[in-house]
Image 1 (cartoon, rainbow, N blue to C red):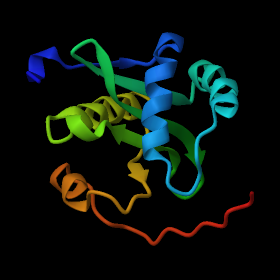
Image 2: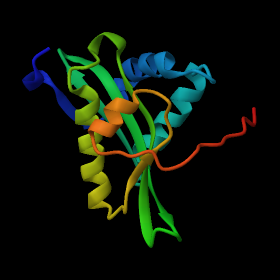
Image 3: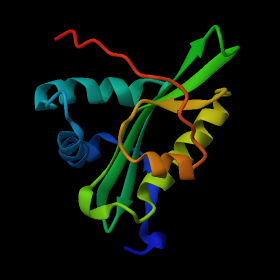
Length: 144
């Protein structure tokens, strides 16, 4: 894939099938279900504090990133959180993940976020190469 073929843009309702397929590849603890995905997607697309990006190459969505900006008290304003970032298995190491994060960071800056954070166990070298640092331990409790 030539990098000039790559476009990162806001996702649209018409991207649903390709994003759902990627989300199914992403899911570890939870298995994404079509009905729940179909209910959530329009809400995410309409939420001004959410950004769902699609990385399109060769006419197909080959990666996506879902993130949010929200207010905090400790950081003196908003921060940005990457909830999901996924690149199709056969399309990795071609600049797609980097392009998604760069676009998300630009959006977060435009929203005056103090920082971008995420929780992940995958690809630590990738995130470090983009200037991210390990900053905390992540805890969770599954409720369903």
